[in-house]
Amino acid sequence: MRSVKGHLSSVAEMVENREEPEKILHQLNAVQCALNKLRCEILLQRVRASLNTIQSDHCPEETASEINHLLHLYRTYT
Image 1: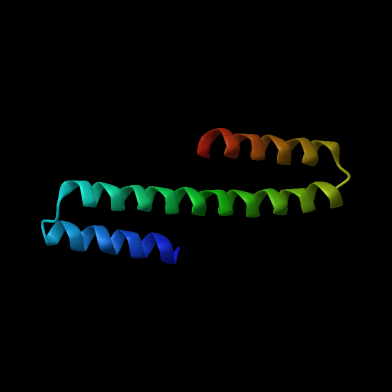
Image 2: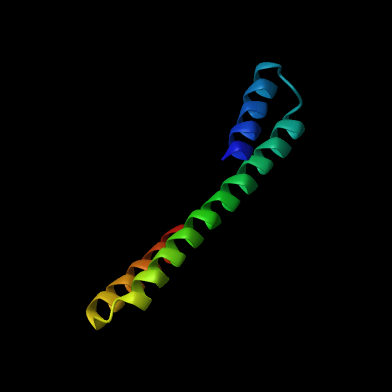
């Protein structure tokens, strides 16, 4: 999260200072990369939590529901 904040702060400063568009675009790319990394980390945390639920729950319906939820998250956010 710090990386995202840092890159966004840099972009704001660069825009205020009217820096070259190429430099700003490069920094925006760094923001996007940091956001992608954060998205992956959050999804991975959710997958780990779901695996714990699936392993400890012996109800087939709950397992299927958890898997469907994970698939939905994957399709929506990747």
